[in-house]
Length: 215
Image 1 (tube, rainbow, N blue to C red):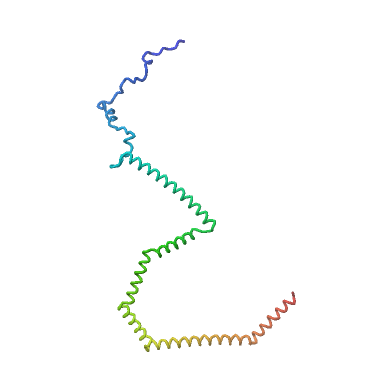
Image 2 (tube, rainbow, N blue to C red; image 1 turned 180 degrees about the horizontal axis):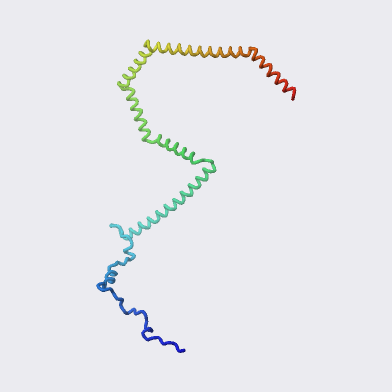
């Protein structure tokens, strides 16, 4: 059987780069115009513009210094983290708890406050105000008036009667408690001397003796 020959029209290439792609009606040249409006970024335009008043050399120097400072900051952070870990290990070996550290920090903070200039000046001002108040005529007059009222109150008949009444009530209470104690002691003595209690003691002694003899 002979192979079928390929029709001439099927042997042509399927892609023709030289032929322009068809465009929809009314859209001729739209894609080309759009592509020409898109700006192409270059390395110079992508980089931030230098501030006004700085030359390129000054900008490069500042950027270099900034990089060094950032590198030093990173190094210091690593050193600080290592020191904190070492400090935690030392505290753990010494048996110090976070609460001890908090107490120490609070004590140090309070000491710093006490020796600070603001605290010292405030204490001095409060002392001066206290002296001025206690030495003022109004304060002295009020203190003298209160002393007079206290003296008059303690010397009044009502105060004396109240004191006497309270004293008598205390004496009566003490006497009553003493009498109650005496009565209880006497009753206990009478009960021990009674025939019933002695008979009970004899029975307890007999039971105890029998128990010891059986052992």
